[in-house]
Amino acid sequence: MDIKQIFKNNQKWVQDKLNLDSNYFKNLSEGQSPDILYIGCSDSRVTAEELMGVSPGEAFVHRNIANMVPNTDLSVMSVIDYAVLHLKVNHIVVCGHYYCGGVKAAMQSQDLGILNPWLRNIRDVYRTHRVELNAIEDEEQKYRRLVELNVQEQCINVIKTAEVQRVYRDRGITIHGWVFDIHSGELVDLKIDFNKILENVMEIYRLD
Image (tube, rainbow, N blue to C red; front, side):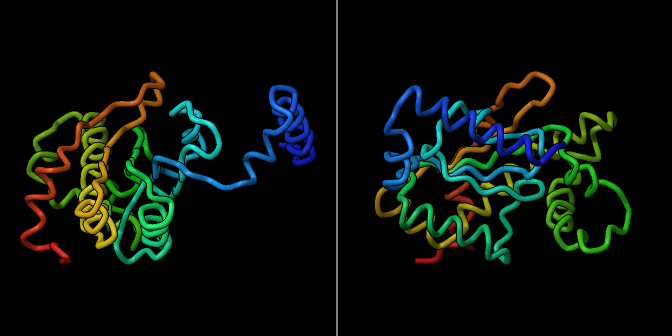
């Protein structure tokens, strides 16, 4: 890739926006009030705004390898805190994708160096659901199912956070688990039952 081309692309994008609205960047600079926090994978094939069809300012986005929400990761925890307490988003989306390299790597018995502690979070998801996953003989279907289960578990991790629990109690908030199907381009709603999960985890994770 020619890096200089990026700046040419930027100038064209700026002009296109100004042609449509001469105040576009003036309005954009006045602040943000997104309704959605999107937590997705860093995979270069998956772009949050494009797949949701939203414009700048409509989604607060955090991305990392395999769309993880580990409570020890200060980056994602800070993003959740800022999104729910300051931006006051009403929806939190955890979006994985089929054929995720991070999930695939976690399925392999391989030492991957610095990636090991990060991928262990996904391996913990496998361990938690190993009975279901080991019953799936087709490796591709097992892989796809682990992607879905990982999204589900990361939604649970979101619900465990004090900020989300507090906001849910005070004004309400909704958690969504989605998977992007790279083969079709479609978003799959896993229909995460927020209230059911909340009831199941509150006995242990309630932070009142």
